[in-house]
Amino acid sequence: MPLGQGAMFTAIILGAITVFVIDREFVKAGLFSLVAAGLSFAGFMHAPELALNAAPQYSLGYLIVAGMFVYCAFQEASVKVTKRETVKQSVAS
Image 1 (cartoon, rainbow, N blue to C red):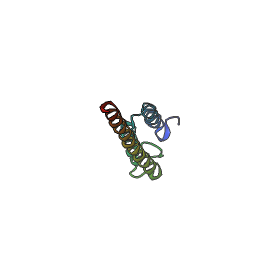
Image 2 (cartoon, rainbow, N blue to C red):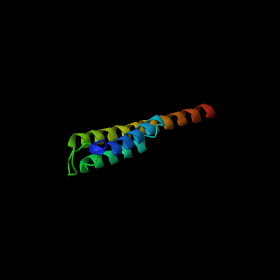
Image 3 (cartoon, helix red, strand yellow):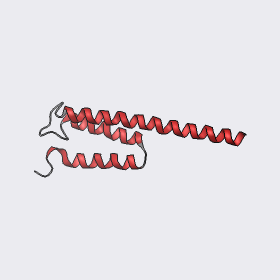
Image 4 (cartoon, helix red, strand yellow):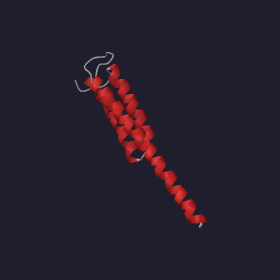
């Protein structure tokens, strides 16, 4: 069964996450991770049948990855603010 256990959903979601990480769009990558967690929870991905909490390990894994992407987004925003303040200080002096 070539499309068993949501292989198509998995490929699309992981591909989108990869593109957003390469483009450093961590918020979008986190959103796609949350979508993957929902699909895994409902059994559309990584599960042999549709059922609630069908693949809890994968759901939890995607939630952890989404949290990591949110952290990366905050770090990225913090670095941009720090750089902007440094430029303003150097221009003012």
